[in-house]
Image (cartoon, rainbow, N blue to C red):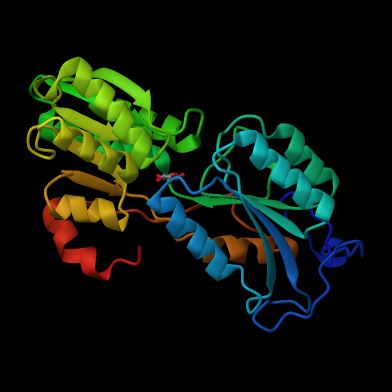
Amino acid sequence: MKKKFLAGVALVGALALVTTGCGNSSDDAAGGGGGDKTIKVGFAQTGSESGWRSANTESMKKAFTKDKGFDLVFNAADNDPAAQIAAVRSFISQGVDAIVIAPIVSDGWDDVLNEAKTAKIPVVLEDRTTSSADDLYASWVGDDFKKEGETAGKWAAEQYGGKATNMVVLEGTTGSAPANDRAAGFGDAVKGTQIKTIASQTGDFTRDGGKKVMEGFLQKYGVKGINLVFAHNDDMALGAIEAIEAAGGKPGTDINIVSIDGVHDGMQALVDGKINYIVECNPLLGDQAADLVKKVLAGTTVEKKNFATDGAFTQEQAKAVIATRAY
Ligand code: AHR
């Protein structure tokens, strides 16, 4: 089954749904699919760089099941933008009904999104955004990365803004929406304070990357020369904790840490006093993404941007919720 798609616009009457009959998926849905046929969906995931990513992949796989009317073709690109674009091209040539992408980086998507449009395959973006024009995808669901950065920055400004503070930054993947937007949001919030960025480098959102970059910062500045770490995600903060401990420092005390995600290991480190503050980034986007795919294929009007709700945690707040968190 394939339905002609007009860029996220609701189509009514005779224009609503046009079957071209060239799709690959033809099994009857087992129920709950909202239609009579299984919907074949290609999902181009970034890779498996972090705890957040594992939770996101699990959420997507639980939402796009056969029982719910989907046939999911899953690809994880190991954080390689060219491999991710190749995966999307392969979905197009397989004739899937819809494509979901969590873009590794923001730029470079115009050509392949135009190819999907020409093939009349709607694209839903999940998690990260692209710099492509809005009419090249149907909808997006994800978290407000700029607001996450702002929340982290506001907390840092309140805690340390009034005294000279040397901060190092562990950046996410260069060119990715969360790295760009979190940096911008944090920067806005600490403007005019005494927090000074003495070094900033990518750790690629991985624990290993965060550890290596932090080791370099510690070699250069020493434990005493760094007061604050802003990590764009929990995994890099966890790597930084290992590096600080190996250098003889006490994370959370000698060097304070603020990070983003709220995955279980990060929350445990917050409870243990090794991280000082965490801003949540909700990875459980699967049901919303699946709902959007169905609505877009049915010609129902959808919002272009759909934001998940995020919280933020001090140590006390983390203690209160850690046992009941879903990821
Ligand atoms: O795009 C969301 C980010 O990607 C998460 O903060 C990070 O952990 C992941 O790798």
